Amino acid sequence: MYGAPVGSFLESLAAAGVTLVLDVRQRRGVRGREYAWANARRLQESLAAVPISYRHVRELAPTTELRQRQYAADKLEGVGKRSRRRLAPEYARGYHEQILDQFDLRRLLDMLPAQGLGALMCVERDSEACHRSLIAERLRAEFGFAVLDLRP
Image 1 (cartoon, rainbow, N blue to C red):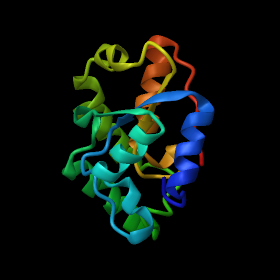
Image 2 (cartoon, rainbow, N blue to C red):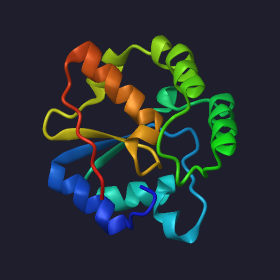
Image 3 (cartoon, rainbow, N blue to C red):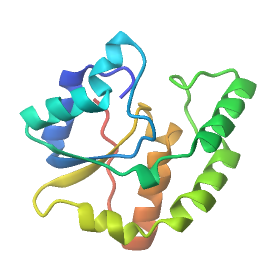
Image 4 (tube, one colour):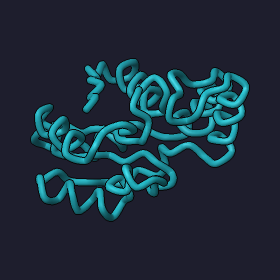
C-alpha cells in the first residue's frame, strides 16, 4: 500500500477479481496525508463504492511486541518500515509461534467469498516485508493455495 494512491489500489484489486479484502492489520490507522485513505473507515467507504467487501481479521495481526521486534531489527539494518524489503527472522519466528500456530486457517477459508477472490491487506508495499507473506506461505503449504502478490 505504501506508495499507492487509493485509485491504483482499488484498480489493482478490481483487475484481479478481488471481491473481499481481509485486513490483517492490528492498527487500522496510517499516518500521513498520502495514506489517509487507508484508515479503516475511509478504506471501507472506498471499497464499498467499487464494490468490494471488507473484513478485519485482527487475530492475524502481529502483536505490539512483535512489531517492536521488527522495528528493532529495522533500526539495526538502518531501514524504515516504509522502505523495509524483508522480515527479520526473529519476527517471522515469533509470528509463526504466537499467531499462525494458534490460528486455525480453515476459519480464514470460511471467510472467503463464493464469487471472486479474497485479498490479504496490510500496509507494506512489498509482501516480503509484511506478515501477510507468512500467512500466504502457510496457505500455500497447508491448502495448496496459489497466492498472487498484487502491487498497485
